[in-house]
Figure 1 (tube, rainbow over the protein chains, first blue to last red):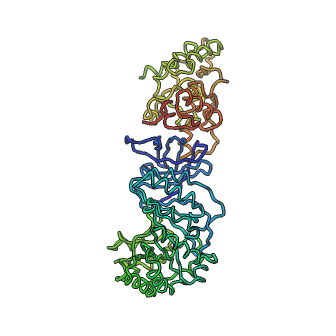
Figure 2 (figure 1 turned 180 degrees about the vertical axis):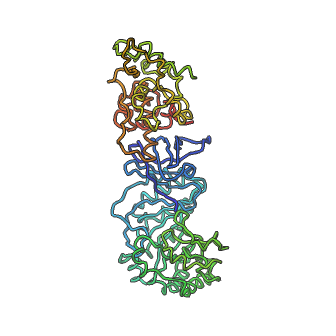
Figure 3 (figure 1 turned 90 degrees about the vertical axis):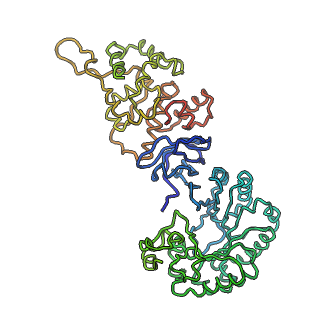
Length: 361
Length: 204
């Protein structure tokens, strides 16, 4: 696992964002932190914000990372790791839903870091796709949209992907979201079932599905780019074909539907046995749903499905979705021909399950 | 280079190390030169002595008497980061050679006299904490080493008068502020790359 948060000591009085430079290449600017020294335990840098020394990762692996130094808590967050396609910024830990399988259980307090995150985005590598997550980012919709607009105005090469429960879009947002800048923003929105009771139960909020559908009306009017996301659960697996029919009939404007296998962390960890649907035993509901999508020409993909676990005709849907920093492979995967295209397993996936499941291709 | 190591013991032999307050203040004036490093006459001599570095020395406390001695006069900055890192040997070569210890006259030879501080004790940094403290972890040790170098450099400029302890406290922040202001740098009260450059304690 690649550590995203490292212990740090700093003389700064306030948090600051900087880009780490370990090579003495020219072209550094005032935003860059200069390497002062390093040893086996880590590296020390000086930046405009102050001096800081970090442990746990060799200097060479930090070059180019955009980081947030938090002197009070003594943590350094690697906000945008150089060369990683999986950089995601967490804008809040508050959420107005409480999903049964939440991988990142919400907190009650909010720490507004939008200004710092904006600085980080402006320092991103060229052509970055930056993920935005939470908590629920649109709880701070105006701050969020302002940050997005500022960054996209300044950096014509950057795109955003925002994970949102879409409970907070209003008709008054349509004009704003029609700004051509939003062609470079896609919204990842969860929809677990078209059965109101079931969807609302899964997200832990009454009225959530109705509110979601109202938001779709706003988003379609704004021409927003949408990725629908459905996490596979024992409770909704048999609803998938119905959901697929609904999407292909009424939500055809989406870019893609992502069917996601469960992640063994957060709430899902202790509810694993109740929630996890083992698709090895019965792939049919998933296959039916994918068939419907294919038939209607709406794109679909499988997230977090190891390729060997998917019947061959559907393997093309299974993409390498798990982020680099939390991805692992089972020992048996070493000999698999499709490993490079495979999502692997979450770092926290039970090792015995992973080992039992793998059948190298 | 070798000859330069003799400067200090020679001064001691010449009586510079004595407790004569007038002499001490003369030396102090000569070193600090009104806040500007380059105008300090004595310091100009001493700045050749960069085989020695105090701040990063891992076994500092075991040499505390030398360390305190050294920190008084060689705070003029480290002109080469490289020599700093490989300075351990250089430091040890600093131990006063007995040749230069004035042999006090008649029979019962008193123990060899340790070099005395050039600057009155009250104006000088205290030695780093002695043994008995837990050793610092990697990041804390690296951080403190750099801070000590900054403290020494600011001490040499008469801007910092606290301990050479590797801790960023109010006195050091004040000194950083004064230094940054005097050099027209961004006033951050933190240790920035340009501050390290201007203090000549930065790498590369």
